[in-house]
Structures are given as structure tokens and as C-alpha cells.
Length: 539
Image (tube, rainbow, N blue to C red; front, side, top):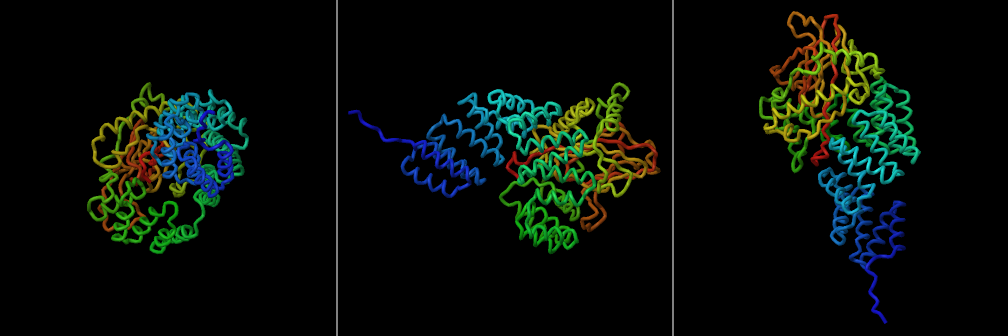
């Protein structure tokens, strides 16, 4: 009789029981089953894989990573474990490690459609759009029925300005998976980019009806209503996107009523959303400078923060007290202002400028009916993302601007601050919009804390700049009228641009336009450079 070897792996029946628990959300029971099975089969890599899957479902990525690493230790060729480990690294902001995991999974299993798709998502987030498109195309070629891959390919096309191709990919995803909320939301973004705001709102609402947890749809709907001037609806959907927390809501009410001292207490009690930023801003607005500095160090201890809201407050503090910037995001930010010409705009008798102005006025770009920064003045701004539009003029300007920003980085690359050290490797714009001003138009002081670099390209400027030569110019500083000033000696820079110029600067910097009386229009395209801080593990 032959010697019978004991079974070293759990049976398919055992695994199905665990998988069934996970699919039902019965994670406690799944862990109980896994614990029992692991005592019988201590070296079964699939049990560690399933343990990792449980932890992923609970968003406990550190524990999931340990499970997948153990599975790979037992079975180095376990492609599913490499892929899922990549997912954990991606969700933890460790994107370079995620890419290596996806690549290893593909090396082991070249036809692994999910791994190709996940690699494409990671590359897309890092700004490698062309490589991301190639990965997504491989995924849909291997598995034409994978709706997520078609959706990801659509996002890649959208990011590269190929809106027709993006729409076709989203439609393929919905043909496979009609109730795919993300694809409906993404189609809404195409409608919005094309100025079809009613269709965009309908798509965003469809996404929410299909998936009440589709946070991106709440955000898209909120921003659309904000651009249309429907502030109450915008606030409603922003709150739904953020979630409900009574202490945070109370803090926001107190903050809005300028009761900053009490607001700070409720923000800290809430431990919700961006509560640390809000605590610091409340303390600073309340002139509790010592406590502001104390909390700044407390919140930064042990973590490398790159929060641009805090950077703006810290820069103001440094000038207010004429001391060193305690945050060191971008000390002395006026030294990082760029003002130069974009040569492509001036070539062929300003042909590109003329095309851009024509497209802004004639291409059906969604116009914001209200923008709180304009203070009721003669200002019109576009909605959507103008660099995502299909017109050739916007594509040409996009590429020329990227060249300008690359030159800027090379000029400053040896500077010792976080703004330069963590400068985006890939130039990718999170937003872009046109601003048309007539006589009397201006924008009040504001900043763009969600960006990394902000700026504007000037297509038309007033010929008459007033008696002081500054009307229609842009003023930059760390000063903001809603923050308490201890003196009036804040350093300022005023730039009066010419047609074909670009001005850009670190996004936390406050800036405003100076009103002008001239009858000529002032037309520019403003932009924010994207910086996804998860790549560096910051928050």
C-alpha cells in the first residue's frame, strides 16, 4: 500500500465557506473560520490571501499587507497575492511599491487582466497617462468583459483630453455593467466639460442613486451647483460627500459666525475630515498665536505634512512676527513667483491667442453664473476643466504651459524646502478655467490650497493701466484681509502682465486682481497644478 500524505491545503469547500462570509460582510465569522483552518493548514498561502482580503474589506491595509507578504513567502509565484499586495500599497500611498507588485503579478501571469488594470490606475495617478493607457488597453484586450478596465481606460482618455474616446469607453463599461455608478459619474464629467450641464447633473445623480457611497459623484454635483450659483445645493452635496459629524457641523457653524475660539474646540473634538487644518485656522483667526504654534508642532510631530492651508497660515505667521517660517513648506514665497512669456502665444501674429479667445467665447464652454470671489464685479468664469476640452487651441496651450513649468522647476530644483523637494514628477493639471473681466472687474484676495502651483496665462489685457500703472495687474503676498495683522509691512509683489505672459506661484500664496477702468477686456486662463500627496505618504 502506498504511503498517504496528509492534505497540506484547505479543501475547496473550506475556502468557499470563508469566501461566502467575506462576500456577505461577515468578517468576524470569516476570521474565526480562518483561525481554525490555519491551525490545521499552517502553510496554506490561500488562507493568508483570504485573511488579507478580509482586512482590505475593513480598510485595515497594514494587516492586509502582512497577510499577503506571508502568502508570497510561502508561494513566491502567487500572482493574486502580489496583485492584492499592490492594492494595499496603492491605498496606503506607497505607489512605487504598488507598481512593483503589479508588475510582478504580470510577470508571473502575463494575461492577468486585473493586474494590468490596477497598474494602469496607479500609472494614471502618477501622471504617466500614455503608459496608463497602454496598461488599460492590455487589460480590456485580455478581458473584454472587465467593466472596470473600460472605465479606467475612459478616465485615462479623459485625462489626456480625448473626450470622444473616453465616452466610448464609459459606454462599453455600462454595456457590460449597467449599474456601474463610477462610469455614470465619469460620463457626467464629459458632459460638464462640454458645457452640457443638465446632462451632467443627471449623470451625477444617477451615480448616487446607484451607489449612495459614490463620494466622487457628490463632489462633482456639489462643484457643479457651486459654479451655477446654487450655493444651498452645493453645500448640501459637499456635506454628503464629507459625511456627517455633529461636532464638526457645530464647529463649522461657529466658524461661520466668527466664534473662532469655540469653533477650534469643536473641530478638535470632532477628529473629523480636515479638523487639524480647521483647528489651526480657527486659532490663528482668533489671534491665539502661541496656541497656534503649539498645535502646529503637535500636529506635525512624527508626520511629514504637506497641507497647503497650513502652509498659508504659517507663511502669514512668519511675516506677522517677522520670524522664520515654522512650517518650511515655502519660506519667502515671493521668491518663487514666475513671470515670463509663452513664446507659442506670440508666434504668427498671436495666432494661438486669437484661437483661444474665439474658443473661449464660441465653443460652448460652461460659464459660472456666480463666483464668490468676484464680489459682484464684471467677471465671468468658465466651469469644467478647460484643458480637458477637445479644441486644438487648449491642447497647444496645455503643452506650452508644461514646458514653462518644467523650466521653472529646473531653475529652483536645488532650493531646500518642501515645495521644491516634493514638486510633482509629472505635470498634471487638476483644474483650469477662463476668466473674462470687463471694466471694473476684479477678484478679491484668495488662494488655491488644493493645488501645488497656481497661475494664469494672459490672452488680452487692458491697454490703459491707470495713473499708477497697476490697474489690471495681479498682486501677490502672504497677506489676507481675514487674518489678523500685527502690522502693515507685509511684502507684496504687483505684476502687470502683457498679452502672451504667464504668471504662476506656490498655490498657498494669496493673490488678487487690481480693478481697472479701461474699456478693454482682460482675458486669461487660470490653472492649478495637481499634487496627489498620497504618493509621498503625507496628508
